[in-house]
Length: 500
Image (cartoon, rainbow, N blue to C red; front, top):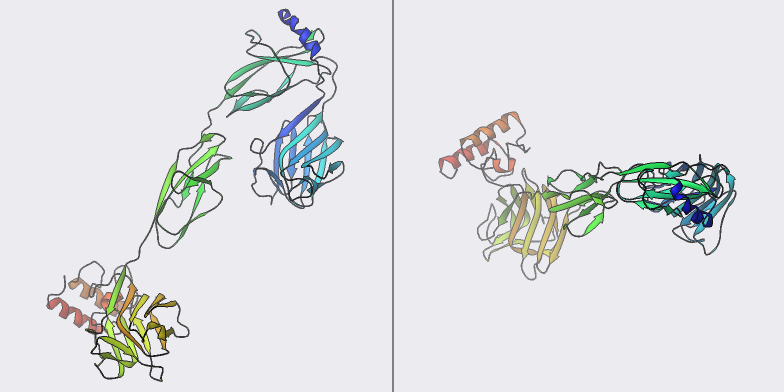
């Protein structure tokens, strides 16, 4: 020990009082549990506890909610000063003037508010929300005249990343020296004049000096623990969806921040559910400090509903209409029936719909499968814009040039006839795959479909689709319903050789 007495001359020149200590709170280093200032939150460091009735100490910057009460307590000595460094200046949102209480002051042009006094417990209030980028609490330690050993903060232990280390000694006018190593294997002595950082496993020893006196040695070991971060978990974990899903991410590692990307290159911090409405792959990773998890991904595929088009062609699809004679008529295509109240099928190759008059009508009815689109191909001067949706009919009807399109989801669609309209073609799209006679939906038309149709007529609802029954395909004779007549039509279809 005596071989180091030569260093005391340096100590005498650099002696300083260690009666006061500071405890510094930095967002991201010392944290609480809340990210929104709407509930009680608390954080502590080196014997100082900061508690707020509506705080967010996991947020960066720290947030103190409007109308909240903040209590700062110390178990290491009375509090002499508290400095709040805010993200905004006096007079602005989140500035230091939002705090108030005995002993507290803030001034125009400054973003720092200060409480001064002598107490082991300080209570402040917030008029509106304040946000702090740093809080420094100064503690008054009891003045000790007897030389005592220094104290490491923290006093050894495990850490991740990098660790800020401070040393204190309550002895008045004492100096502190520290080195890397033990009492027996001493390294280069350093005069302590502020915090230093440890980035790997190290053992340090320190000693206090005052005049020619030297304290006992204090040795601590800081052990670096390799930080591991769990990969985020997707909910749901990929797969298919029909319309829209909201994807959420979670990480089991405490205080981890989650990031996601839609191209595995540009990353955004995850803050809430991600809406998915189309095919997409989402990549995600989690971070704690500089340590990242592995990158994981999930793929979501939108199911494309099967549809079938029913093409009404006036050159061949006459139904019960008559060419060149006005009157009402119906044309059936698969599950869809087009009804015209006053019109005709022209030999020139178009459907003519007359109106407005008392007999005017144009509507579409589907059996078993909803209509999702109707496309009208009009003639110049007799365009689709002469139609409009009847009252109470859902969906949208838009026109462009001579043509028009209705889109929605309905079993019955009705139109007003405002002026005569003529169409060279009408295409009705229904939801679901249509194959006439494939009653059990196995992709084929055979004798099993006759059994399925009879079962539906005898024991179930022939208009309700199930996993193994299609009312659309069951309407074999193309009328307006599913009846025993369709059994006969299906048998005729099979006997004619048109089945599979």
